[in-house]
Image (cartoon, rainbow, N blue to C red; front, top):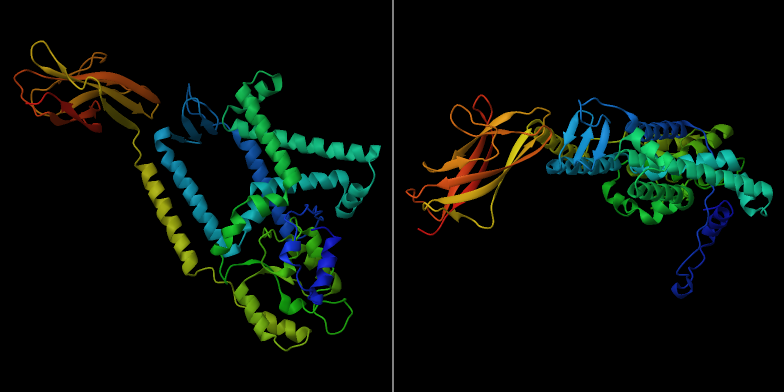
Length: 505
């Protein structure tokens, strides 16, 4: 909401004019551009620190190296689509282990619910990518075009050479940041030095350039042009985040019991709010926090810094706008009922407050869910197998009748080795006595005559396996069998069940 519109809305509130008929309301309203003003204070400093941390991690992480040995990518964090691997420091995940990624997403969702129940839209106001990049774009905009009033004047001014120069410089800087953002995202899926050199020299693939352009464009449009509209209209979180809150959640709130009735600083019988609109002018979504809980509020807390500066300048206590619970707002409102504005009302209102209750049924449920999912993922990771086997029975033909009257079944055995070693494993067969096991591509046999199979390091080895029943062995139409992989010490490292099929007896 712009500076010109906010006073009109505030002045219109006491008039209690009857609402316009529904038939006269427009179905579409043009966007009223928001011009957030720069502000200094503790909340802003925290936001700068979080912004620097998030951007630093995003741009730097793809360049970090992690030695995994020869023939393996040395990028610390890499989604290697070509080889179907996800590398994260010392962790390497295969496609079969996608459940770890699903578990991480579930943990993130539960953590978001828990944080929201405690502190409201803390994620939206401080760490959401839309907030972080919009903050960065607005900082660049202020450097080039000036603060709130200067930007409003510039937009209203006629198009001169100076205006064209400032607008061009701003959008060029935005595009440079967007290109760096799109390029960094590509680096999480390709080797960072290699893909950077390819992009700059024009030798990258069409797929790389497509996604580079896609992420550059989306960053430029969402952070530079859409801004608060993403939070208000595109993001689903504001629609259901209220379900995460209760009366004990700390959210950015205006203490109406202290600020009302509003009036000039030197007027008699008015509250602490002097109707300066500083809170509205710094809001990145252009709302008035004094209207209470609103869908558009992202909980960034910049209005707290703006209001505290005014209170300090007037010699009044800070905290007219603060992180507060609805229960404390209600308690303070009841405690000061009937009291005129002044030190006594302030003292009683603050005394009625209680420390926030961080431990309550809702938060305990979230903590329990986080603990259970975390422990389950930790157990699954610690117990994850480094060597697995898959046995696939031939579909056609299901069995072959040999010339001597015997029956042979064919299988495809796949050995997934998640280590860098090349172990020699013996393949053993569990089933009725008399069944014979043969592997044409075996690397030999052990002392017991079992075929030896070489497991491909960090890869998938595939073998054709045949199981034959001699003519004298009479089996059912379907007989359960099992294959075992044995290490050099004879311990079973993998086991897979299957069936031996034959004609009806």
